[in-house]
Image 1 (cartoon, rainbow, N blue to C red):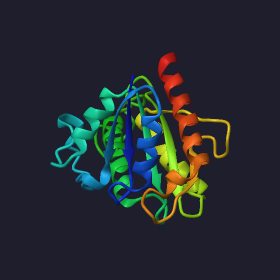
Image 2 (image 1 turned 90 degrees about the vertical axis):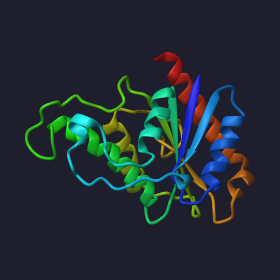
Image 3 (image 1 turned 180 degrees about the vertical axis):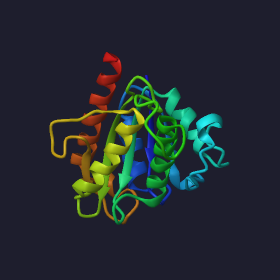
Image 4 (image 1 turned 135 degrees about the vertical axis):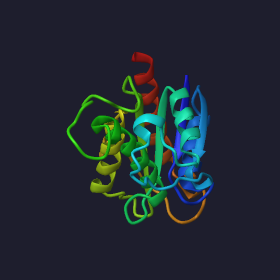
Length: 201
């Protein structure tokens, strides 16, 4: 089994990365971690070229898409900024724009391919939501999850609120989240559910 963690923080090796690595190191799986802080992600220009050619913006998006396709399940580790980090939202927006263009064969017009999704087969995902207060924000989390479902991912939940994610307290100090046994256990619990979902699909 191969899992992928995508960390949305603007800070390299921050708490999103530390938690993802600690959880994945403790489980029996092959994994990779992509830190968006190390990647170039441009904004969608609504050029409509992706309808026929794929996205023509020259940055790191295609590399990330390849890693997602290679993986059986994906963890999105996202810290709270005003809502979610701007680069992470630009990443989701780029992917959602590709889906939209294929559904409509361009920016506007009627829905031609209503069932088009970027990731076929409902690739399972889960979310680590981190904030200094321990409260990521329900509306921001819902936005992230809605985007991912629109792309064709299937959410994996657990039995603790907010169910679709692990909502964890992590402040400004790098690695601080690792001091929380509860955070590590909740992360492991959710990723175990992710792995179980992979095995049944």
